[in-house]
Length: 246
Length: 126
Image (tube, rainbow over all chains, first blue to last red; front, side, top):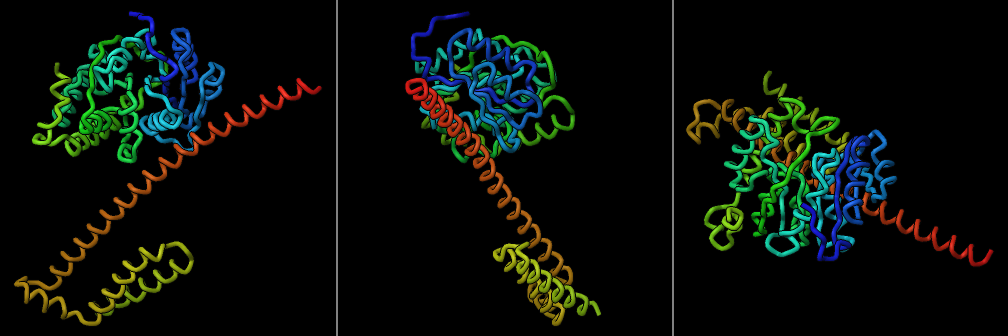
């Protein structure tokens, strides 16, 4: 699982958006730091608990948002910070401990080697039947062929960071279909990296905690997928989707 | 009677628009649109037969039906443009909040560096 890095890890930034994650965040950052002295950035999305202090104590840089922007708004802040500070790679992880740091080298590998612009930590086993049905519908609507389109465990290279830091990506709400379609439309190469994920040890998901929120999420994301889906005849010039399948 | 009510609504709307612009509660850019609507109310209130004539010319049986359809369409377009403006403002607000957070972190880093340099200088010259 672990591989020694053969590249300059100072060029990579780990971005963790966090909202009231004081219980798990410290452990997540420590696991990353034990693996390698990565720069870790926590984007505190208006937490009302000790999330910011916990992150500071764990030697992470903290950005405090003055207004709550949601998961994607917080993540995009991290991407803009990375671009401003000259990082070439960004790894995004959840603050709730679901993503295991031991997979970080595998996640970086296809991006560092130049085989892909974005790698997505894929764990299809974690989904319930309802979640898997949602994935099928969202893939059909958006034309995406990735295995785990809702995974927030990803590595972006500089080109992908530039695409996602732009104004066009600002009105997205989640780091899922909208983000992947935008990357796909920009001709970037996306690849799945099989990983394992842990169940949440505390708190609740921002999306999957209420049927009403899930229904609203599904309608919004389906409409977004259909609206932004790449037009077929334009695919002939660049065909990242065919590369995805390979 | 009906036309008098329409004209009165138009006059009242015009006064409200002017009042809101005067109190800086409504941007004059949006005020122009609503003022035109108020004027339209006054004109169609004073000359209610205009719609009947237009309806006849267009081959529509009922003047009020034409007025209602046009009114609803205009309202639909207006609400849509409001949502477009709202989305643009939301995008600007999000980017501004992000920028503030990044600049705050830069400022803190600068302050920390300045503090460290100061303490090093103090150590050199006790």
